[in-house]
Length: 120
Image 1: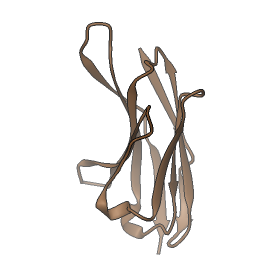
Image 2: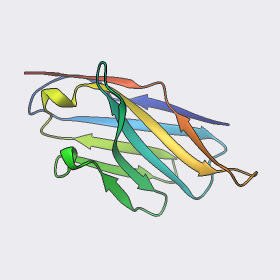
Image 3: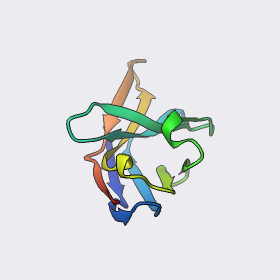
Image 4: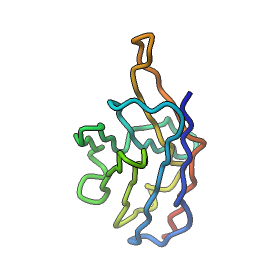
């Protein structure tokens, strides 16, 4: 099993920055993909950014140039640096990890989420 624990959310003024962290524990495969999803109130959960264990990244168009995802494979930790935050970035940010398990099926794991509030 995999456990994901997020930290770093909070209240920030528009234009400010926050850095989220996601620590993964349990049986972490050498090949996996970690990411961050955003869910605003009443909206669906959408991908913000993702990074593979090899370092390939993917970003939502709305955050390109403002957010940066990174990871420390030795620590099984992913980070999301969020700059120039906008009110529409507010919501709950969920850490996600996907990896192939021993049954050769891919599994998705989720953290509990961390709240980001952006004041205008």
